Length: 256
Image 1 (cartoon, rainbow, N blue to C red):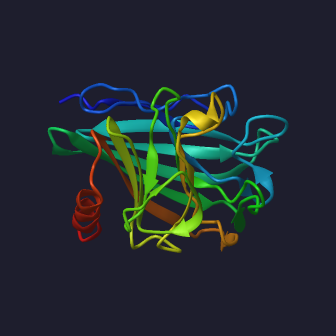
Image 2: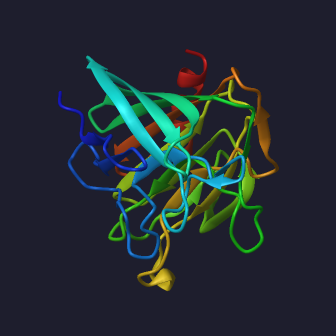
């Protein structure tokens, strides 16, 4: 089948948009007015050696795709993280996106990024106060995807997550689910989650946001020639997946 999602490699932040359920409902938004640097389903890090690779105003770094090759369900791209001066390559990334069929009502994208800094690099975030802590794989959900809540393995419905660690986080309504899974091989597993749902109380404001915030508790130093590799699975489904279903999907994937 044709995957119900589209990879966009020409952006300053390569991303997936639109992200659709198997039935065709669009669950992502790219460049909303409140945060135009939010790019649907994407991954980057706030700071590399103090330079900004998250927001897109003032001086900021760009992720420039050199090539992207598709072989069956898998696309592999080489991406240079170009410093704000427009010249230096701070990081060479290899990103792999693989479409995985899970059933008639759901599928997954296996999202792996391998970051190799060209010099010793400190990957960092803005420490959380009333906001902050973010970096890594992120979803910005569609504004018309309403009545969502957030769930971790304990199954409790939440409106917001501020650094709670868990192996996965699901954003769901009765209409659809997106679950982000954190692989046990990832550094600082289980990742802290920074997230909010969309409810009428938000009006037109920022919401439907899920971030696997692995730098929440502190920066991470990678020596030149080293690698920071993170593996995630993103499950997209029609309808609300139960906690038991997401947990079973996580177990199968984590053991593969």
